Image (tube, rainbow, N blue to C red; front, side):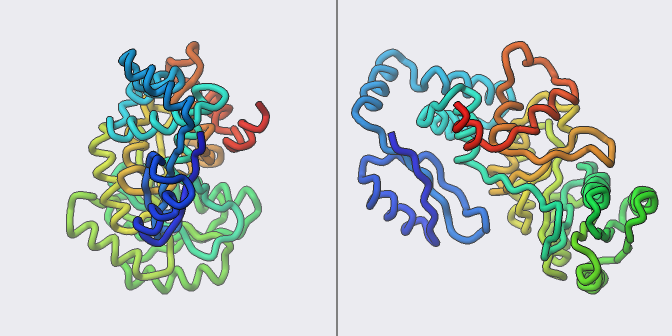
Amino acid sequence: MRLKSYNASTMADAMRLVREELGDDAIIVSTQRASDGQGVRITAVLKDSADADDDIRRALSGRNTSAFGERVKDALEYHGTPARLTEKLVAAATAVEVGSPTMACAAALEDQFDFAPLPERKSPRPFMMVGPPGSGKTITTAKLAARARLSGRPVGVITADTIRAGAVEQLSAFTGILEIELRQVRGPDGLGPAVNEMMQKYDLVFIDSPGLNPFSYHDMEYLKTLIASADLEPILVLAAGGDASEAADIGEAFGASGATRLLATRLDMTRRLGAILAAADAGQLMFSEVSLNPHVATGLCAVNPVSMARLILPPEEELQPQPEETVKTVLRSTSIRTEVNQR
């Protein structure tokens, strides 16, 4: 079988590329917005006659997926992943079926999602943490700043959260210990000049924003004015766990308002990851880091398709909640291509 992704400026152009290379028998596995927000990406598969025979046998036996696909399907259902997204991931895992169910799941995740950890060195744009109240934006801002500071990078922090009581004091406690400059601003009029000034001084700048209701038109319009006030990138901070349908609505709302990546928090207190999968899918968001614990200095880890697959589909004996060190080990995986090549 042949599995390939195509990028184009429009859906029609992408479909034309699929038909030209794979022909009319190609099956569309997934469609999504390109990682840069411009254009679309389509993934299609073309099966040979042996694959088609296998499909017929599975259909006659009442089984629509392979053994790998069944394992991935069971795991995604355990995590509370929405049915539509589960169907797409299982189809992709069944199509590739490489190495093991975990690696097939990783291939499906790589096909469906983009993974883009935040830079730890220099960035031309600051990053603003956005999300609903209580998602962990302030502590995440502190963790990102601490990671940069401990790596020896010049870093500055801005807080635009003047709504929540104690928000500035909480962030000030962390930045003071680490000797990081903290600038407090009010609204978009103050944010723009502060960003321009800090970007001239620091390699990395992180911005904390107030918790906003994704279902409030007023709140989302206010978020858009913050984003438009400076050349910055909004990162959706969302707690793992919870209802997948609600998370999907939250991801879609913040994605429509300009968020580009999803940073999941409270992974150490969550057994099911369907909510963050649903949010990233609905909002067309790239996965970046995950938060493993409340500790500022060591609480973040980048995530990739393999490490995400291992969290979704751990070994049988590890189906119970994993201790923090086990989660850290899982998340230290390299990339899916490295893992596949080693087999």
